[in-house]
Length: 308
Ligand SMILES: Cc1cc2nc3c(=O)[nH]c(=O)nc-3n(C[C@H](O)[C@H](O)[C@H](O)COP(=O)(O)OP(=O)(O)OC[C@H]3O[C@@H](n4cnc5c(N)ncnc54)[C@H](O)[C@@H]3O)c2cc1C
Image (cartoon, rainbow, N blue to C red; front, top):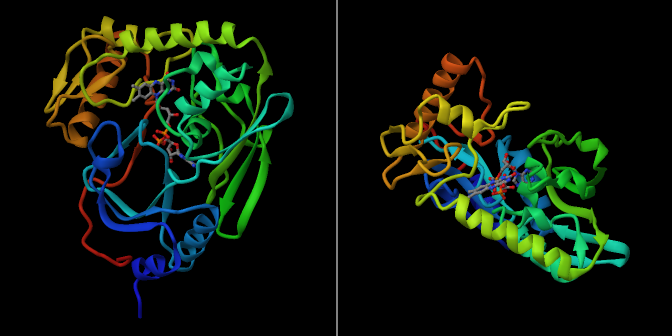
């Protein structure tokens, strides 16, 4: 009987890897191996993969560029789908843009600004894919994905389904995707504007980001959400944690809501430092900081290899 790995390899035009280190697919450069790592060639491949994974009762999750992910050192049991090959993009009439989930958001925003489409220019420089940006309701400079997404297409083991933005219940750095679904396409509604005006905001935001985010090491952007009416970086700073470290992980001296991998960090160092920050801020300011980064995977390496 062929393994799930072999069935996927035989059925997909994209690539399928086993025991793929997640450190290679996350901006923090940490994380153990995923049992299976699937790069579908296109949307048909996504549906085929989901069907086979469902038949094998294999758990799965979608990732984008891994710029908001902390994968534990034991890695991920089951399959990871990376949609980087899904990059189709269509500019339609009246500021309507239809884009696939693997498209890098920086690329999308640059093109929108060039075409005089307003609504995302202040988000210039946010790393990651469109799928990740919608899933996280990414935002910056007073704009967020919830303000521009009108509709999405989700892939499920049964086929593709459309949902409106209202169905996704967007909130601060989150939205609700139905279980057993991943996002393959989003429709955005932007406002027609003067490209020159948008260029000014776009360049300012990029320059600000280059300066504020130059933390000198692998990171995943802001680690904690801002509690209502407060700024996480300030709470961390006031708790005396600037430069605090654990193993190879360090609270950035430049931006205290960033944790930097100084080169040798393991996920357990970053997790330990996250806990240290939360405890100290709770003790000093009575505020419960909630991680913005998604923490996934297991601590221990697997004792079984049922998928591969
Ligand atoms: C230097 C730096 C600066 C940053 N600045 C900002 C900022 O200003 N504002 C901000 O909001 N974020 C910021 N981030 C965080 C991050 O870039 C965003 O959250 C980004 O949108 C994540 O996209 P991604 O493709 O990397 O997603 P991933 O990190 O790969 O995934 C994030 C989540 O989305 C889910 N997901 C990804 N793709 C799909 C899909 N196709 N279908 C369903 N679920 C999916 C994953 O399962 C996971 O739960 C920053 C990160 C870094 C490293």
